[in-house]
Image 1 (tube, rainbow, N blue to C red):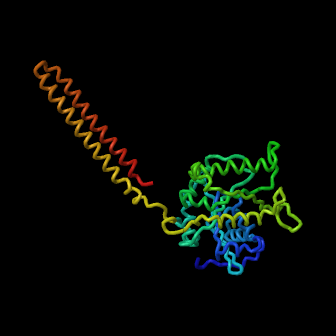
Image 2 (cartoon, one colour; image 1 turned 60 degrees about the horizontal axis):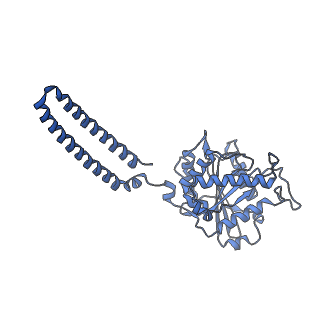
Length: 347
């Protein structure tokens, strides 16, 4: 993290007492991901107790609340360093953007502000997957976003995940109680995560993903200690930090950001795994082709000899058989090419 300015973390008191001793680590690294406009940057600002990301974007002239590229905020206090990487929204033009994912990992043109620069050979301790509580449905795009994160960082990243639902200060629709609405919304999103990450039923116990509520608005209600609180009265920043701490200490390995993760699987190496199968398929078709040729030639020769003895006009049958053989050969070649393309095509 050469060149990364680490400022003193003046808002560390938001963490529970003795959190540093409980963590027993020198550094905690959090990756924040999700769609655009869900409150990722605002949540980062709330955790560090500053409007740092907003001011950074203002200085860059972006004029937009959405982070245009990965930004790492580092804060340190008493030998403990907190790193939070805020990332751009993963959806552009109604699709998950491969370019954004490449930028985050360090394969795009903004390599100077990417995981490859910030965290090479270091570990992601916690993933905050951010969405909105007041999004009333889950669709296929949500599943595609989860799938993209899984494909980029591996299924194991969900061992270290917290689902964060922003805009938590709301009045539920359809006469639902707040608890009922939160339960339905969180369960539908967790189901989407399980499907997008391809987590099987037998693995569900190993992927117990907690859900935390967040309200970043300045209109958020506060208690007598000036802490922002949820409708339940729970101060949400300490609650979120407790949840992050629990996930960091859940006994699962963090995600190592190495060159292999940044570059992704090597398509050529992956293709080599299928070479024996391709050769076996080719050999099978070669045997089939030879057997077919032998069968057709044998029958053709016998029929021609017999038909020449009978009548010249009957040679039309031989022509038909020869055309059948030709078509069969063409069909075999087509099938061989399609199977070869299917198995060997990178990606």
